Length: 186
Image 1 (cartoon, rainbow, N blue to C red):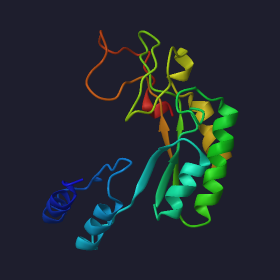
Image 2: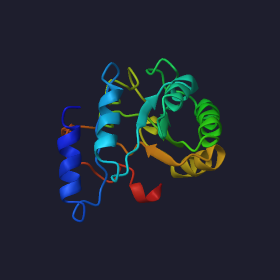
Image 3: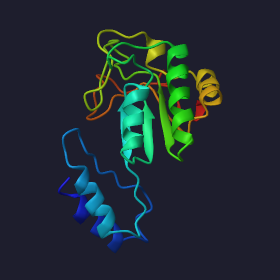
Image 4: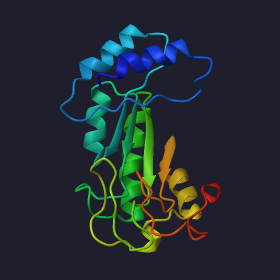
């Protein structure tokens, strides 16, 4: 988080050339006061505090109560953060978060699908969140029709999808082929 002020200073200095978001990640136990100080130092730069991978509606409500402008309900996993959830569960918890968040002007991101290795079926994780064990291929590739149904049923603002990739360094033993879902289908 010590990089927040220099990063915002660089963003300000090159505002015309930088047309993308700047992500400053804060983990549990780090100071919310640092984000607030950065916001005060650069009031003309639009900032949003986003809570990522909320495991339950209660976690998302807690972030909303703290003043976060954006939350993510990761209903692709049960509340334990390790067990893949059903589509119906995901819709129910994400819809609940959307209803409470939109009442106070907070945006909601949802997730459909799990991270994993298409070659081995092994579950993967991002920032300590992810399924454990083996996954079915269908759990690692978001179905475009299911995505449309999910968005319609939940009315969320943004959707994280599973497209058969792993986060971080290249983790495939072969060059990816057409069996990896194309984003434009979703």
